[in-house]
Length: 381
Image 1 (cartoon, one colour):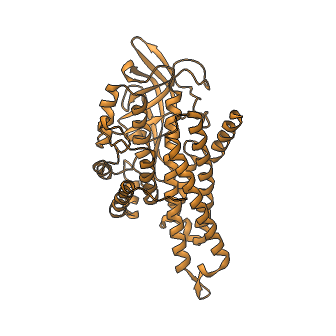
Image 2: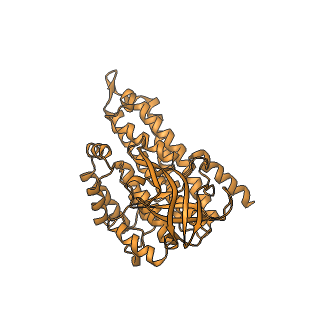
Image 3: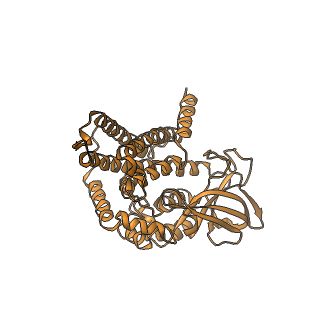
């Protein structure tokens, strides 16, 4: 299969790679991860100046009208460099939801500032008992005069502590697990009744558990029609998983390159260890997994243009399940082939492996997506 890019996308790829090579070296990233915010405002502003934050937003919303393949190029480069800036939380999820379902006033208020690097968003949907199920929402939104009051708890909300506003899913009707009755609200980070416990994740990112206690939200803060948000939520999660597949691909390729270089230079018994046939076979298997993962990342990106939501979900889950398995294999092999140094904090290999592990667990792990794929296949018969 020919994976070569069109000229325009090749230029985008070169631009992002060149920027990260110059401005996002591993030691600089370590300082960013250790900072109070956990991301660099300077880097974020530079990403905006490069046009990356508005890349996939519509022209009329201040963006460049790109698609999931453009996101894939950016995310693959981000994976190689282990970028911790909240691109998925703000651009792919938060801005994506507002672009899909927001009204004209909401799009004007948020999408332009996001593209300019002036506003950050988060997407609070997951709950402790949900086990990745998109329709499992226990958080409640009850009518209160002309507006709503939100009560509930959201877990592992990416970038919540840094966000200016959080897109929150809440049930306006029905019971947990029902597909109907879920609504989306745009809640200010410092709104009355919002509290959170922020923490660093294992891969150097930031997330928070968010508690909502009587949080006020007017009808102007509701995104889309009341009780009809499940389609928007599922599309947002599929979009995020497609982006994560490309990020994982970038990490896998970087791990393979670093491992191959190590096999060529590390000597034992008077020769490079890469001359040992057993290690050559393991390196070959890692390379095969990388090529297969690239194919599936393309499948996930292409699925985002699919008008049939069921078919889109099937393809994205197939890609996320396969890439989750491939990432585990490549990560384990890379660490083992590097020996004891492969798990040290000083070597970037261990950080790539951590990121792959977190990507697999984010928005549905390989087991969940394998089950989802299977259920969708059976339902189609």
